[in-house]
Amino acid sequence: MSNAIDIKGLHKTYRAQGNAPAKKALKGIDLAIPAGSIFGLLGPNGAGKSTLINILAGLVNKTDGKVVIWGFDQDVNPRQSRAAIGVMPQELNMDPFFTPRASLEVQAGLYGVPKSERWTDELLELVGLTDQANAYARNLSGGMRRRLLLAKALVHRPQILVLDEPTAGVDITLREMLWQNVRRLNRAGMTIILTTHYLEEAEQMCDEIAIINHGELVVRQGTRDLLNRADRKTLLIDAGGRVDLPPLPADARPDWRPDGRLAISYPPSRIRADQVLDALRNAGVPILDVASEQPDLEDVFVEMTRT
Ligand code: ADP
Ligand code: MG
Image (cartoon, rainbow, N blue to C red; front, side):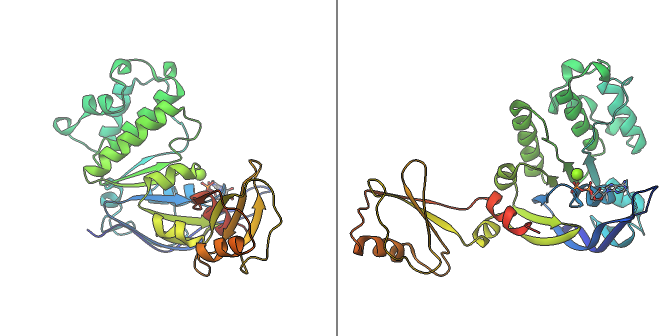
């Protein structure tokens, strides 16, 4: 299996309702997600991420297009395509009268997992809910409920795990625990697809990233290549204080940082660092120290979703 997910020409239009007009949430998305990867689906609020994920999960009906999950066309083999994927939804919807153990057993029943193949205790252990196994869901903290949702997504041992904003409003301990689990599952061969608002997180976790905006795919690239795409680097120079600046190479932009350092940003595809430094040195600007800054995913994201 080379692609875990293969999406072609995916459209979703939510019908007009009352005063709300029809909404084109997805406008022809083509996207292949390689098996075995940790794949980030990013985009501003309202971009269509949850719509896309809910279509994958079979929770929202697409308007048009083709969705193939683990080799199974959703329209031809709905059961197999659904069995290949587990989704941890963005919303915390759960039955307050079930205990975590019961909740996992019910979910396993829904997916037709035979009793002998269930791994309820291991799952509870995996998400750190062994001690709460028999507590009512209404007595669980928000963090515990999220962990239960992760366990529920895994009951049928899917090949693909999808996490929609898993760490939104979640404390740092739970976040780290979640990412540890995700990495462990990925090492064991599971394909992971996640959306997150925390770009630093996506930068650290994801092999590849797709950015969507207004229901369209803006870019899809390996994380490293995507970061290089910004074509901006910054030299931070300690000139011993503010000095008059000579003319710099075209496209190099100087700025003084609050700490007194001179920040010169430039496009590395067109200018080399030594051209910037030579211009300063030749004008007698002292260079007491130099550091450099790379763009991060935040910069790239802002640039790509400006409209
Ligand atoms: P994201 O997850 O990227 O924030 P969503 O997929 O939730 O984006 O939403 C995409 C667009 O579709 C938004 O404009 C949103 O208001 C709209 N939308 C989402 N769900 C519905 C729905 N059930 N009915 C009508 N419009 C919806
Ligand atoms: Mg969403």
